[in-house]
Image 1 (cartoon, rainbow, N blue to C red):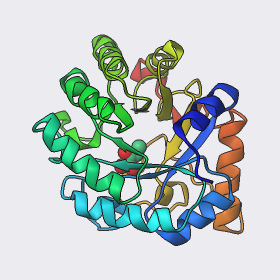
Image 2: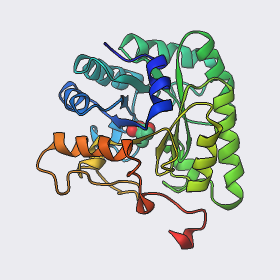
Image 3: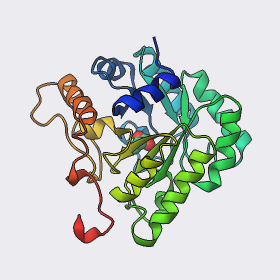
Length: 268
Ligand code: KIV
């Protein structure tokens, strides 16, 4: 039976959660057999599946298509679908319409990027029965505003990442992806214990970890961020690589020092 949010919250209190992105039925079955707790149909599909150089061209229809495939290939994992660029920023009503499409494709939760500016939208969705996962720190849909894929929250910016996380959690997000921020910033957000925090280039103190599937199999395109580890190295199959990822996350062995960021770039 498919896990519920209640199951996921209980598990997060007992052990670390392993999440991976997934875009099709075959990989969904492999990931689930390795006991990955949650599958994210990320808008990273724009890069690793469609070959774009950012996530911006992805549409709700694209994510819905891949969500249906992942749902058909799995039966237990918690399913999170990304709200693509332009599908939710305009208004809570626009976000609701996009989220409905993704939930009807089989998502159990939708993920959106941003901080306090998204709080009313998150509350609007949550009040209408749609579980929300926030995403703070390096939010790839803001690549043009950031001037590239850069670590966020260093020095004086630490407080703005923490404030973004607090606003998203206080608005009712049940899960929060924290991407590419200094480890102490991520640790402090996780310590609030207000949502299920999922780190990617963040901290081992988060309740769980996520990676882009293609990246952790050494098949990523373009930049290879510091937080990526190729789990296929030294393994003889994809199943074994995913299994090792799950074991390392659960044991608190991933991420290690070389996959996270110090608050001072000299230290990394
Ligand atoms: O789109 C995606 O794959 C993501 C992960 C990097 C968290 O948002």
